[in-house]
Amino acid sequence: MTLLLARARQVGSEVAARHAESVDRDARFPREAFDALKQAKLLGIAVPRAQGGDGAPISDIVAVCHALGQHCGSTAMIFAMHQIQVACVVRHGQDSAWHRKLMERLAGEQLLLASATTEAGVGGDVRSSVCAVERKGKRFTLQKNASVISYGADADGILVTARRAADAPASDQSIVPVLKGEYTLERTSGWDTLGMRGTCSDGFVLRASGDIAQVLPTPYAEISAQTMLPTTHLTWAGVWLGIASDAVSRARAFIRAEARRKPGTTPSGAVRLAETVNLLQFMRANVVAATRDYQRAMEQAEALTALSFAVEMNNVKTGSAQMATQVINHALLVCGLAGYRNDGPYTVTRHLRDAHSAAVMINNDRILANSAGLLLALKDEPELFA
Ligand SMILES: Cc1cc2nc3c(=O)[nH]c(=O)nc-3n(C[C@H](O)[C@H](O)[C@H](O)COP(=O)(O)OP(=O)(O)OC[C@H]3O[C@@H](n4cnc5c(N)ncnc54)[C@H](O)[C@@H]3O)c2cc1C
Image (cartoon, rainbow, N blue to C red; front, side, top):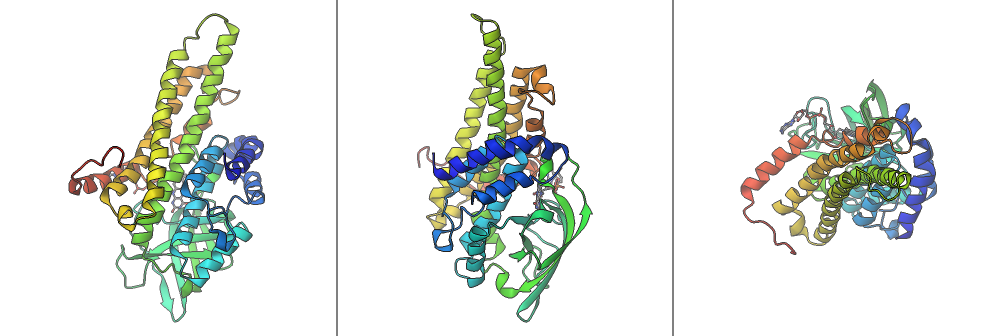
């Protein structure tokens, strides 16, 4: 286990777990967990060492998401969403002094970054924008009707997607980090949802202004395909795997307790548990393999643009989203009423509610439709051990 992972596990079990119930019940930002993550210097781990971070690879980031997901789904999801924004800055901002400075601040000050991609008028189609970067000399202004900005009110900065310029078409997008003090947020909707309640994903009209140097120099189309989508799908899958793993741990504990109560007999739910563990292993293998493949692909530009890579990353998202609820449903059956209750050591109700966000968080149908288009052009199955 890496030191980073040990720190994350400690924050998860000692802080996030303790407050998970009230975060969920009150739909509040997991303040205690994020104070602890900042103190443990975990928010800037993906920043390169040259800018004061740990230079953590994607596998470490996914592992931390998984570790936190076992204790508080909202904490883990916020951590994942923050790391997605950091990855975009780190991979596409190295040639810009403004973004290198931001990386230093991410590591040094442990800034928390949020994301404003979803927009009223385009729904979940993150590859098109209504709003635009309005350029005036060396400055810009930007106004976005963002239907959802998770933890917008608690973030230190927001990465905003927008059309590159006032006369650019909807799909010609840029991404711009704006920092606290450079934007205002006017709340347009609240967040009273089934699960992931602590992400506080309110809607806002965001109004920002800043220096043109803040716009990431790479077109968003490239950032999205090479960094944002793969990092999103892998870190989210890591979170859902963590939530599902904890539900399975509870089911295992339930069966062990049953076995202790009636020594010499195999509890009737034990076979269902074996099936649940089997499903969890499938889910885990998918996340681990896709994470390794992304790590490898990052070293070869052509691998990142391959259609098969895009399909694989889509699959890790849709597959994990489907399997998370399936695995937790099985855990619920194993625990029976003890799992169905909202209290007690075997409850898996929050797990199930949180996991239901997975299929709508960039809707699985939208992603499958995208894969369907790619598959028309993709002829061969990749080699088994390529
Ligand atoms: C917990 C959580 C946190 C989030 N945080 C953020 C955040 O911080 N920042 C942010 O920008 N966004 C955030 N989002 C929004 C998220 O990324 C998605 O964009 C959003 O969930 C999509 O919303 P939608 O279902 O209204 O839109 P759509 O994706 O437009 O879906 C609406 C309906 O249309 C159908 N549909 C749409 N397109 C297709 C298609 N091509 N094929 C088939 N069916 C289709 C879908 O099945 C669905 O029924 C968050 C969402 C969740 C659940």
